[in-house]
Image (cartoon, rainbow, N blue to C red; front, side):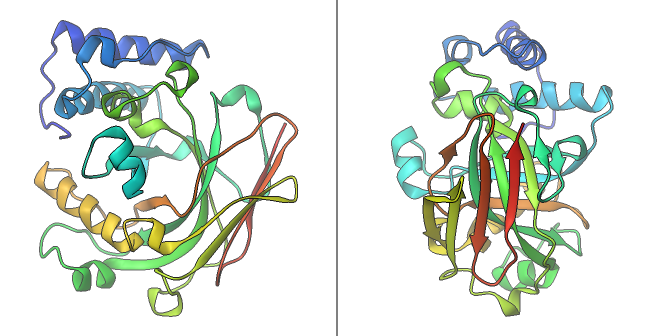
Length: 265
């Protein structure tokens, strides 16, 4: 899992540099598992950590976390029994309804999610009740996922090393307390250019998006980097991802919230 200390082995350094250059030069790279193996998640998180630190050194600031692989079907496909996670940076948040430049994206796909924002640090007492007490509000969101791995040819270590395939994210303006939303049964519809392209519900995210958030809280605390007040948590997709291209418009609707959208220029 995400390591407190990164041991600079040759494989880790090479994998991190390949991913960094793939993003820098906007050129997808071969699968990283060819270097670090296809099953060593701890090694993959160490690769992720190197490039996270490098982004911070270059001016990015962590504002939250994203949870990936929250679909049990996708977990089975990749041969894992738990989600993964990546970092959210301040300079990858996009204002709802605005244009996104295709040149800033790599092999992008969109998925609709519930986002949580914390009002307390989460350092102990990992129960659903304590988690609920620690959430300030939730809102609808769209996560733009993007892979630095060519043709999305990924296994578990590829996506972990690649910051859980994170790219950008958009939050809706309507903020709701948890008491006002049915997180399990809320329906999601995602439209591309006005046509329904994906649909699902809260149950698609580990039976309840709170289950994903609780998993993350436990993992982050165990690794010495507990979730903090003010952080944004993207809890995972409520339906299948949707690919898009320049000129497309993506809009997501989740029961109880306002619509979230962006256009691609």
